[in-house]
Image 1 (cartoon, rainbow, N blue to C red):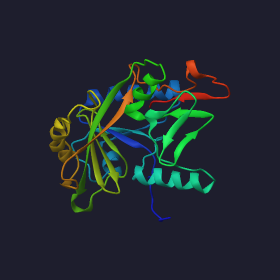
Image 2: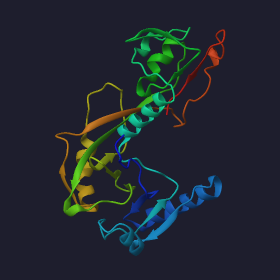
Image 3: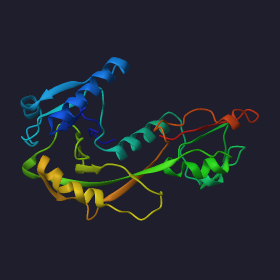
Image 4: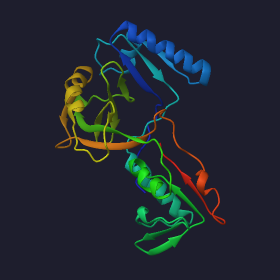
Length: 253
């Protein structure tokens, strides 16, 4: 296995601010989250922020750092390593067609039909396709986001993900470069891509951090499911708690 860092050594991510009112409101929220839920944070004034992130704009007035969060530099490699570990302890991974899942927990794969005692449905934005086939009508929508990597100028790099909360974008150091991401777009899963958000925030991001040339020829889009209250659906499906000795769990995050 390659010796490569996939997680940041330094935990946390920054929420940076341009206006005093927005900064003060964010501090109040952070204090409430810490009091009610035990979520730790640090307050950084302009000087502390510049010491911590030398490449960020000096026009920023401060930041809130959420210190308990971790970030991944290469999500694909993380999944690969998890799969390698799973197989090393006796697991077996096969590719199949999830739409063939039957209530007896049989599914067609490239190795033929397989059967299990339990089924976990974790299909991301395609979750409703399987859920409907099993008889569930859930209030699901799709959040779409646009992404692109940029090369940093003069070797600059942020030490942690940086969210510009007022202007609606995030910069994160990845193995491929500095990733620029947008706010969510609520749209049908298979609607044509409309990367106007990314085009709008790119010049703002370059004011915040010295982004250079883009790595990809064009942005890419990702989708994920969401519910009206943004909480996950997690646990045994009520209509399939037992099927002989079988059960199913429906998940969306």
